[in-house]
Amino acid sequence: MVLVLFILWLVLNGHFAIDAAMLEIVLFGLAGSGVIYLFMIKFTRWDKRIDAFFLKRFYLFVAYGAVLVWNVIVANFHVIKVILTPGESPEPVIVTLQLPIKNEFFRSMAANAITLTPGTITIACTEEHYVVHCLKQAYMDGFENSAIVKIILKMEETYNDR
Image (cartoon, rainbow, N blue to C red; front, top):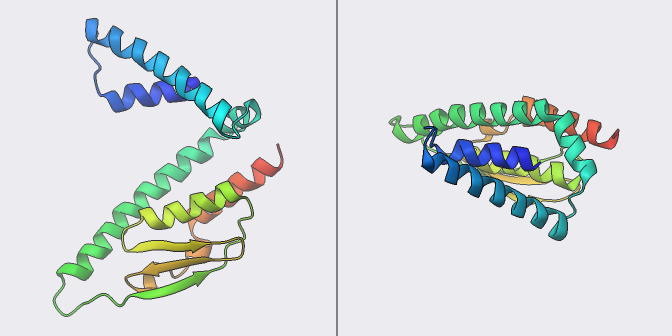
């Protein structure tokens, strides 16, 4: 996990020239990644088994991120259309979803995916259902069978098999 945190640090830093500043960035990145990892171990329920799960299933996390980014881009255009098209107006609705996700972490991933998508926001997330506010009913139609839910269910299935 330290390596993942360090790579994230390098990518988000945006400095890729080989010079004295890069050495400073690398040193601070390694130190910061180590401190964050130690914090994760001490103050959260993180352990080495989760590291192993994350590294073995890294492709699922990448797929989740890619699908989420794509959904956000598409939803942006839907919301822009609602705002800029004359005569078309939002029809806000509150929808209750039943998703078969059992694990708390993966339920929160689904709730965050909904909230990060423009035009929708998760109001409540319980073990039984999600309550979502959306600008139009069509934004949530078929979400139960969407790619993002399938990826999360696959993550949960492989997490339970570890």
